[in-house]
Image (cartoon, rainbow, N blue to C red; front, side):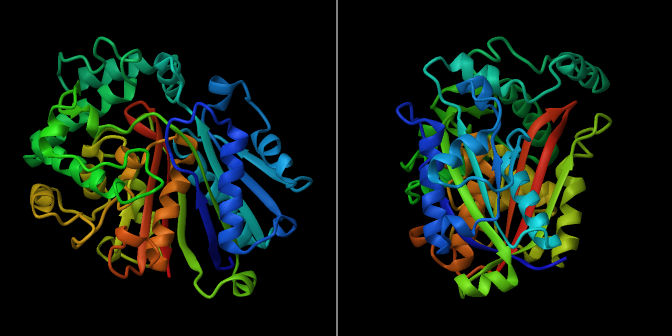
Length: 407
């Protein structure tokens, strides 16, 4: 397998873009990534397009890559349309990396986009709710509840209408972790404050305003312990990357960022909370990159909710569970801390247009490794990681892609 470099990244601001269609969002991301890489359109040999629910939200169910890239003059090349729930664009990156690493192509464009926001929030929640086994979803949860000897229902009234069904599930799992590691709602509020502080420094973030603990805790109850400011907002956006072989990279940049590991996995119906996809996939990524969890300098994790940030660090072996509260209280995950996490603001502040989320994480880590993250720059990291999950299978994540990048 050949070495593969990321030589360019680009993205739109994530947010509520009712006035913009998916072609416009993709155009902006592609123009930015090609300018960043110094690549002309004719030099692109293949394109991989990640998106989650454009069919449900816009009616464009098929050929998303072709209809968004052809108006730019990118046509005639192989195009691959990738859907893997919230992990769609990171899965597309994995496929592009694999194609270049194997020698099939020398240079490929990877794009992720989503038009998820709608004035009718029920439409957005319904689209998000398809990232489960729609036939067996309730049965799986009831079986899980019974296995724990709990009479508490995971899905509460109003789920799918006032909030995504995933919020109730995340809240239920979070309450279990709170008991296990002595974490409190205040700990999660501190993480949310950090995320919004970082987002305030990110011109591409959906939310760009710092908030206080009090504001987070009083921002509106979603499902205990979650409040509104602890949850990723619904929004639109696009992000892109260009990958190429080592030989090609030398023509375009003297600061390539290398993909040291790219792994994709799927959930298991037999899995419980002690056997999550993150726990199973992490060791594969670390082994491929030749690093241990402690050698990760900076990481962007899939924080659909603020508690997910610390839970993911525990499951990856980066933070010992018994030290989780201490890590939060001491600010270890802040930009100036020992292990900066979600310097972009994360999903909770940067936003979560699902098909663009994975490449949005890549965008941040690439800039951090280049030393070009501006006010968000977290020292001089050499090894960065992204963790991007999607959907639910049983009680496990349905899809996940992990990437480790080095400079």
